[in-house]
Length: 258
Image 1 (cartoon, helix red, strand yellow):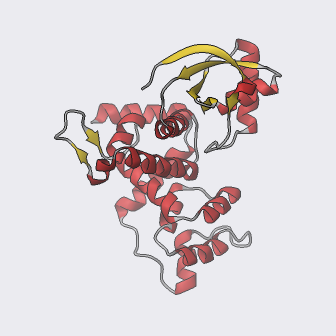
Image 2: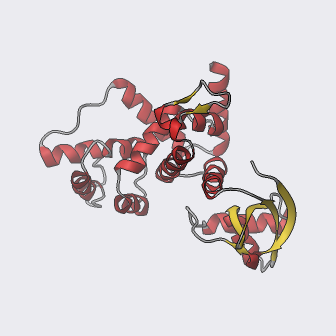
């Protein structure tokens, strides 16, 4: 990681464009209330570039300061950070700090995979453990840094890469974001996915799921899920709905159960 320093910057000095995720009105208001009561506890992260300062992490905190009519914000300023590492920084910050829904998490993980394998091409073949500075595969590196299981990471990347941006927006808009159902949708071709969603998101048939919709369209659905797949889908759905403290408790349990 490049060197850094702490100092306040004018918000107008910071380039906040091209965010991977937009701000949340509810989250911004909660942060603004906290800042009013206790001050800004965590500085925003920026990097110094030839053009000035670019935001790495802290968009909701910036929006909260604007809501409070603040002109400046405390910053942790990194120097000499590449474009690729800056994007990884933003992605990891969101994956670690923000309670992403399964669809948003999938998109972030897929983008992290693309950038990571751009930086470390050898990671595509599983990494090079013969070198002194070991390069791990994307799944291994992400699992270690973010505390996610390799299988969950691979499923998430499949969801983001096998479902088009248009259909992802439609799913997000309708709130149909259960991890197990998203994964089941990836088993079908893009044109089939659209027809399946027409049925699944039909307000007149709210009980229809991906498998049932596919069966009604073709007479038979994808291969039946194994018992392990059914149990995993239920586990991931429960995990995605759990609060942050419960998720942490579950992760701590997994660590002690190894």
